Amino acid sequence: MLGIEPFYAEFISGMEEVLDERHGSVLLQVVPSLESELDSYSRWAASEQVSGVVLGDLIEDDVRPGFLHDLGVPTLVLGEPELPPGVSAIRVDNYGAMRAAVQRLASLGHKRIGRVSGPPTLYHTQQRTGAFATATAEAGVTAHTVEGDYTEESGEVATRRLLSMDQRPTAIIYDNDVMAVAALGVAYELHIAVPDELSLLAWDDSTLCRLAVPPLSAMGSDIHALGTMAARMLLRVIDGGEPTIQQAPPAQFITRGSTAAGSPPVTPLRG
Image (cartoon, rainbow, N blue to C red):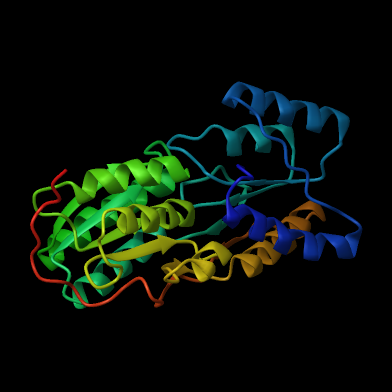
C-alpha cells in the first residue's frame, strides 16, 4: 500500500492501535514494481518476518491475493474484486458512494459536474468511473473526467483543464483529498469563488480537508475505525479463524464550506 496519503496514515494509525495490544506493529515497505512487491512477499513468507498482510489498491485481474494465499501468508484484502477461496476481505462500496456524491451535487442544482480521477488501473477508480457516468446520465448532468494520480501537481493540472472549458463545471469531485486541496489554490488564482461559483468535493475526509480555507466538503468515513476493523479481522485470520468478508461502513457526504447551490451558467476563462 502507498503510505504517502493522509488516508493511509490514518488507516495505519487505526491498525496499530489494535496491534499494540498484541505487541505488534505495521511494516510499510515501498517498492518500485509489482515484481518487487511479489519478491517481498516471498521473502516474508520464507523468513516468517511478517505474520499477515493487508492488501489494498487492487487492480483488475490482480494476482496478489492468490499469490499470498498460495504462499500461505494470512491476508486481508481491502477492496471489492472477486477473491480466491479462503481470503478474507473488507468490501468498500466505491460505486455506491460515487452515485451518492453525484446525486447530492445534482440535488444542489449543479448541471455541469467535473471529476478528477485517480489512476485508471486501480479497481476502485474503475468502480467510481462507472458510477460517475451512470449517475450523471440519470441526473441529466453534463459530466467531464480528467485523469489524475493523487498528487498535488496532477490536481492543479486537471483543475485548470476543467476550468478552461467553454462551459466549465460548477462542481468538481476529486478522487482524494490532496488533489482537492490543490484545486483551492487554482480557483483562488483564477479568481473563481469557492463555493459561490465553484463547489469542490474531496474523497476520503482528512485533516487536510478540515484545515483548508474554506474547509472542504468530502465523501468520508471513519478511516481510523476502518484500520482497527482491518487489524482485528487480520488477527483472526492469523489465529486460524475462518475467512470472512465484511462490509465497510458507507462513505457519507460531509458538508463543509466548499459546496453550495449550483451557480448560473458562466463564460469560459480567458487568458
